[in-house]
Length: 343
Image (cartoon, rainbow, N blue to C red; front, side):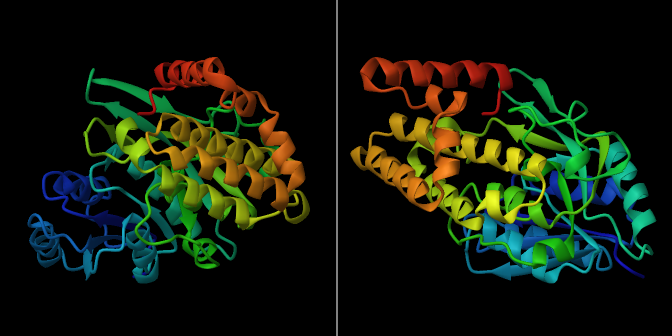
């Protein structure tokens, strides 16, 4: 039987929560054999992640496959899952998150219509939900203001994305061959989900949006990569990812759709803004130096993008000069943090 969807779950010392992620896929797909769960044990040593993964594969050999590898980071797990995937479509589920059953059923119902199509849809977009442990609240990220619901469309037939409409990895189910054209994801690097959500987009010629709250994104662990203090400590990772995304395209020359150009420009604005903010928050005196070097690199690489990003509202607001300007920039960040509750 052809596989419709492959879902990779990279796991690193994930024993405390990975069962919930895995069971959400199996239960949400009603244990259908056209859906495969790929568990990547990324060199776990501190707990019994490997044993738990093997237990699932032994119990459901037609539904679950396991790969054990030396630690390479989240991105290495994503790439290995893609290499092993047999499904027409591919998506990633982090080991501390889970999928909503009803929404997964709705996604699968559509994907199954594409399996025998001579030109299957390139990308399916669904909503994701921030699940905030601290106050037991939810924030739903949906795209109804930008994308027609349940219609095949393309970049030239969207309404335009707001700054908070960014398509993160949690929203994306790609046709697997779109991803296999190349993903420049480095090992041992956090925040590579941005590469996954940005680099393939010019290859996407059509897409379909389902207004369903599929991905449940847990927010609350102290060691989580999106925890603010962790992000500050890992500013080098943020800068590395931003540089890779910069290198991916000269968007004004290589991307056809003006609407996609604008979206990618906005995404890069956010990446440079986040890098700027956390460079200012870092205790490492080299962080600000490296950020200035990144700005200089962008200016040399693509003067038009540099000008548009640096002089955008986001770019100006996160790079105000002087001590008072730095406090103002951090204040803008705090306001956005409270509104969108992204970490």
